[in-house]
Length: 335
Image (cartoon, rainbow, N blue to C red; front, side, top):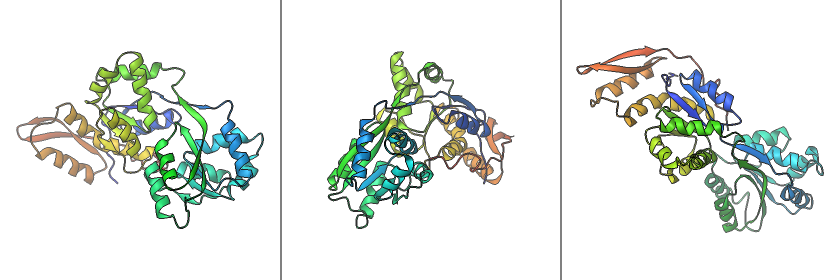
């Protein structure tokens, strides 16, 4: 598989838990990483909802449990461990229908030896969750069922409404919240760098990242300047829900990942960003010949070619060597 790279572009990532990993991926793909952690996960100090869920589960008052995130699975197990050890929780969950929204909750449930009854397909959105339940309604009917839904950071009223419209009684359980990092300095610096035109690409792996970026920008009265500056930046989104958040803020999504995994996001952004940056900043020539030739060459070699300048009608190109980093090495199992 041909491997293109960022060709030295400065790439901003807003990742927190996997900050070191995404910085390495960007570097391996020829970019200059700028990582500004944007999210802090806070476990609820008094989690009455989780404790009540265990009482209902042990009493046979739960039919379906929907797990939205891997961290949510682990946080729930920690929250109830004082009254329900992990082995007991796993035994109780194995008596009901367990729905997992993607590979991350599946992995966390397998760590506990919990059987997953239904896996939501990519891109693992709440709409995909409702769709797969509709497809499997004979096997997993919702009418009259008591559904517990693990929430993640924020509530999901659309999903709750969709489940209730299909006849379910829904009880949300929130086990952790999202907050800004204790130190917002890196985020403020990222906002300033974007406004100054020092950032070429922004990688967004969740909706809350862009919300927090604008929240910090608002705190320094720079939200309008940030929005204007992002029009000149290549924005790469990990999936449809993140893209919806970006669109809601008047931003264009230049790249939406084909698979909602961090490795794919970095790789696809590396393949496309150089060309898109030139288009956004008005640096491309007006002929149509050279971009097609450029990508043809990229597909026939393990190097990425790009234009330095043009003499007459012929492009002058030079070759940038890239590492033969595979998607497996690039963390393509992220989800």
